[in-house]
Image (cartoon, rainbow, N blue to C red; front, top):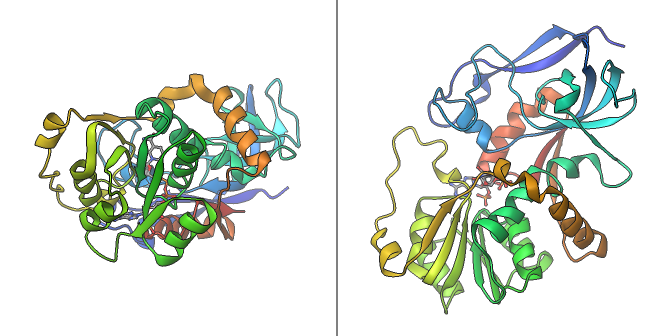
Length: 335
Ligand SMILES: NC(=O)c1ccc[n+]([C@@H]2O[C@H](COP(=O)([O-])OP(=O)(O)OC[C@H]3O[C@@H](n4cnc5c(N)ncnc54)[C@H](OP(=O)(O)O)[C@@H]3O)[C@@H](O)[C@H]2O)c1
């Protein structure tokens, strides 16, 4: 086995949009696992929008990345040495130390995954954190009911592609999505069965959403914030619900973004706007995997992944590409 390996560090904190210069690739000694630990050779890793927030030096629900230290995040790899009970060489594990070729992981922080049940990348996407976000954010946070009209932004991304399909499979009367290209809009309608979709770059969201939702909407699953949120508040029906899952249109803002100008409608229409964090929904894990796994197996639910080859050296550009919208479905980096 090789004695050195690569990791990606935060070289500097971005102000506004990050660039490749904010990352540094470093060569380090392959670490040795201690008692209760395993050494994992990463095979595939995730780049996620929340990582942009961790590049800022602000207190949040996850601590910020440190300048000069390696980044971390979801990854799946193969166990190459084990001092932890229950893990053997050759096992595959899901863990939180991506952005590096080799990781020493505490056994208690690794979850065994089975490549014969699903491709390894699926544990970072459709059957992993983004999948659970879609499932819990729609069914629990938004209190989805059969017959609801559902609108989801970021609809062709990892979370959004599942929100729309879960809504359809659970009996939504109409599913509407927005995304940033004509190809993505086509994918939503022709491949995933959305009733309507629009390209938010082609005109005001309020106008396009009103045209796609002649009878209003009951649920807005917000991945984007800003103009999308304001437009959704405008068309939400009485007692409508908003899941505030993300606000990616604002993650690279250097200045404080303006809030929606129509918040008073929340009162007038008795809307509910509720934030959600996927980590609060661990109790749903078994139900989520059983239900979504069955839909995938029966072909009722489809998903895309955009896989960037080349390992950690390509991770920064994959991350930047995801922020720009280069991905359809989950953005992954293959080692
Ligand atoms: N609350 C939670 O626990 C939780 C967990 C996971 C994810 N999230 C949030 O869920 C959202 C989606 O995450 P994901 O992992 O599924 O990412 P993703 O949708 O797979 O990738 C990000 C997408 O955001 C879109 N985007 C970028 N800038 C935009 C803008 N200015 N306006 C509209 N869309 C823009 C791009 O697609 P286009 O081509 O369509 O622009 C891009 O593909 C993010 O806001 C993320 O922070 C929250």
